[in-house]
Image (tube, rainbow, N blue to C red; front, side, top):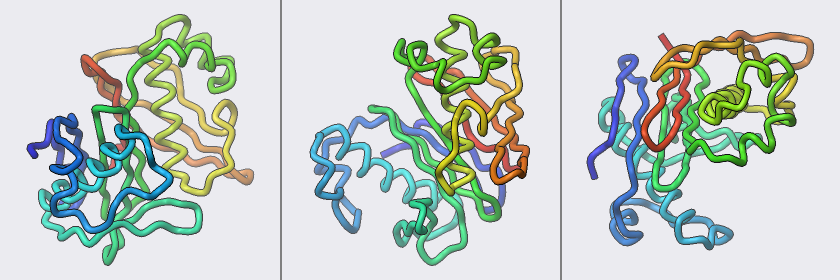
Length: 208
């Protein structure tokens, strides 16, 4: 099960993407546990299984042994038996994961669909809306960036339009983004990277 893409960003930090080509039986091999019973859609089951397989593979690439995933009271995942932060994203048939030894991370992968334009007024600030215009790809970058920051924050309860904000940017095949998370009267600056791929947009946390 080769990785589609792997990037090591530190001694025990990195992110990876792959495309799901396997059957459910193939993805189940080597995994402890099964998809939660509430996951009934076949593609969602494949995403769940592929996410675990990807974390196993990514952990191995970083010199870690994968024992499983634990979650805190807010549902934020961590590597079991390690202090490492992790993040997962699915958009069938693609799965992305990020691991970092020291800091909270987020990663998000989405396919740039028209629905993003329909919900944009609820997701983007007026400045972001003006910057994105009618560009579906740019709207997708904004969406992924906000999902990524939401995962970094890890405490839930944030409004995308006014508590998760991205500075206007020039859209390129890959680049960096400057974001701000506003919560409880505090502001936290975050640095993100993005890539435009033929079938999806990817945003991840810059950790170095």
